[in-house]
Length: 79
Image (cartoon, rainbow, N blue to C red):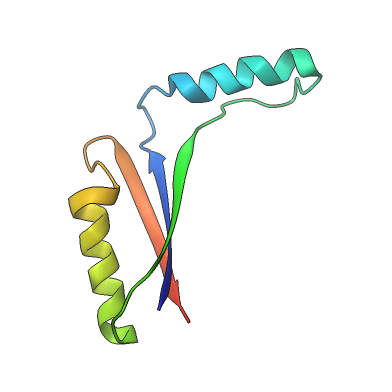
C-alpha cells in the first residue's frame, strides 16, 4: 500500500521559514502571497493489508513523522 503523509504546523505556531518564503516572494512580484506556511510531505510503501495499513501509518505519524506538540498531520493510504 502506498501512503502519502502531510505534516503541517498547528495554527498559532510561529513559522519563521514560511515567513522568510513570503518575504522572498514579494520582491519577485508575488505580493499577493500571504500567510505562507511550510510543511512536510512524505511518501512511503507499507507492507500491510488495507485494513491494517491505515492504523500502521497513523502509528508512524504519532511516534516519529509528526511532532504532536506543534504539528498536525493527515494521510492517505491507497494502492
